[in-house]
Image (tube, rainbow, N blue to C red; front, side, top):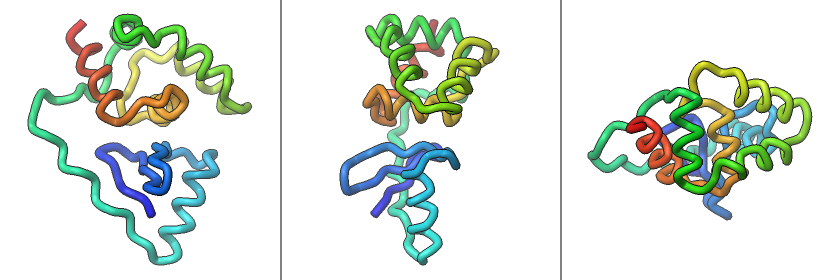
Length: 131
């Protein structure tokens, strides 16, 4: 079984894995196959009312938020752990994007690699938006 999230990602309930909406991700393809079989994912939990999570932040803001959280160095290792061609695409996006989008496949993938929950990713974006 799966659960929707507030983004395009889904959560596999069996192990709590956050699966980014990435056609190159075998877990996401398994989810799509499961849906095609007539299954329906659980609804996303209702987000608590609070400050709005920025849809995008600048690369500077993202890196400073990760630095404050003690996770900046982990990003390079997470990108290096990806298989090709996803690794090269992630390098390009991380180094040259003019913004870091909360709903992007890269953020979802890095969230999985860094073992960050949706709420932890939101908190990073809230911090980044305040910098």
